Length: 381
Image: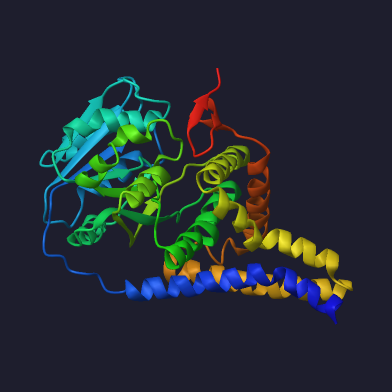
């Protein structure tokens, strides 16, 4: 009897986690089904650090100029070099939206090893408003984005609001594998963490912070030596006693066509960064990974038929849960078209998780770094 049950017991954690994540998603999106009206429309300064061209850069930037928001909006782009290829796009944006408050800061000054944070430090003196939003350059937003995000600041204890992100347009297998990770791993993990322990970190695609909370943690300067500046910004504000809020107005991560090796390298960098930032939770997350559970269950199964039955149960539930997440909640249009890639995505997740423990070196923006305990970085010369 035990021999027959053992394979099913091996996949039970992954099955349970999959169902829990679906329950957390259903609860979260049901609660946020109706937008909350807010009484004030504070001014917003949006800081956008840039380096090089992204896919559809102009359309990404222009989406911030089409907001249904009654308050003032200031856009500050920050680049390190006057020769950056994206600067003509920003100049064109300024010409096309002359009634918008748009400025460009070009400053090569470095304040630490994280060049993105250096751009933010250089741009911050230009920010005139008390709500500061940091948004990655490859992000496109819906017209109601600002209204949705700023509504959370009606609660005076909210110090930071971060947003869920998705990718709806992919360019082949490599980028589909990355986009599937958002739907099948990142979003469920965030929603489960929020439900179980509350939100203690931020997602770099979109972070809105109250100026007072930012000053409390020492400003952007406190992030300059970290690779995961988004995680650190949210965690430091949480530890300073502020509440963090998760907004359900998805922002779109617009990814360019890339080869598989580039995607794998970025996945490994993210994995190693999360390992040093949240070592205990990251180690424990291995128990919920479906791919190693499927392998182990196959080895322990008393017969080939039993092994097939266990894997069919595991992936019958997993494929169904991910399809529901994609179509009903995330609405990224990825599934069922790319459903056949999910086992490969799970295999990738397992190997990046395992490889993250075998070294501390990461490649980022053409440089190589060593990750230190806690998430700080040291550049390799």
